[in-house]
Amino acid sequence: EDATAITNAEAVDLDRSNVFHSWSAQKSLNPLAIAGGSGSTVWDHDGNTYLDFSSQLVNTNIGHQHPKLIAAIAQQATTLATLAPSHASHVRGQAAAKILSHAPANMEKVFFTNGGADANENAIRMARLHTGRDKVISRYRSYHGNTGAAIVATGDWRRIPNEYSRGHVHVFGPYLYRSEFWAETPEQETERALQHLRRTIQCEGPQSIAAILLETVPGTAGILVPTAEYLQGVRALCDDYGIVMILDEVMAGFGRTGDWFALDAFDVTPDLITFAKGVNSGYVPVGGVIISGEIAATFDERVFPGGLTYSGHPLAAASVVASIEAFEEEDIIGNAARIGRDHLEPGLRALADKHDVIGEVRGRGVFWALELVQDRQSRTPVTAEYMGRVKAELLRLGLLPFIADNRIHVVPPAVVTPEEVVTALAIYDQALTAVER
Ligand code: PLP
Image (cartoon, rainbow, N blue to C red; front, top):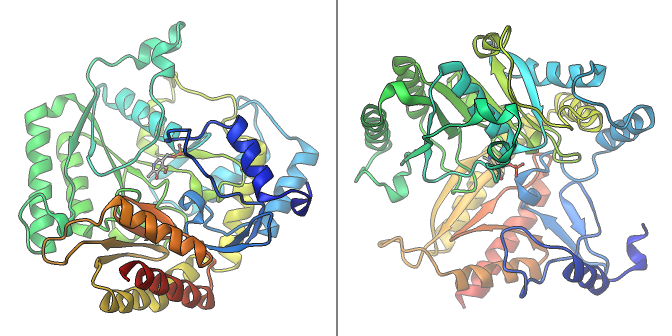
């Protein structure tokens, strides 16, 4: 379709007449029309361009329209555009092998899903069947996806091994800036968060807990980089009580933190890893579970009661192989790490020196949050109305932002250049100055 043949107004009108949007009251929506993109930039139908510092939903790690992925998808489409998961597919095997080649050494298999939510569904299912237990501990400040009822609504035998009477328990994780534990140092926060988790396990009954599910670095909740000691402490608790450790790397994995997996920075080995987003930057929907040898062996003789029509879809698999090869050949992980260390961190800290509204700067790689507060003493979040003005100003200045609660998440593609970071920093500066005035 020729993007210039239609206008923004036409695209928005057609959307508003026909498309039902996620997470929204529908009536007052006014979505931004996007017609195309390249690298860290997107554009609309009317000739406006935006620097994409949202990476959409923090998933275009390789940027928009990487030619190697586009070619791989097109090539696969001409060969075989779809295939049932039960068949052996060479490209699917390659995708799994590529993923495993960057995963911790205990990982042996990959189960493919359509996205991140169903990756977590299946990881939880594996943990429950592996342990014979049912409860799952996760954190209040987390996002793991938007599914849950389809299998228990199912009428045939596949429902039965998935029916669990007890469910989910939540704990607070470390977040020193808004500590739930009255902590003043990262060490106190870590120690007290682990003690809170240990007491929760004991009070819930260790024999009932199948899994602890954590985002390695909580993303949507605020890019809350933990200490290595916290994640290692969770690992030790899982070992003590026979609990499966699941790390959700859907947002944090594949370059976002400047590592292949976010867990690489913390010297921690989970039993299951869930992924999606950055694995192929969402060019074709895909996600999955990376499975340790020990858990995979549970299903050597026993049926795994889970599956999806499009599991390991060939177009997705081709894009995964191409994306991981491009990451390797173009040192995209290295770029994300250097951008974080040499450009985003110093640039965002300088921004905070200038703007009192920035209460905290945190992150790593191309995964940063600016927390905006009414005053630095009370740390009271700025209002939604304030954030709305920040967002409008950023868009007006040509930057597509990621806004969550009182935070700006600074999350460009992992291929972002130093020059683009300079431009973006100037826009954040200008936007905050305008709103402060
Ligand atoms: N897990 C995390 C950490 C996420 O950030 C997300 C999506 O934002 C999900 C899971 C769900 O992924 P999906 O939207 O592909 O189902």
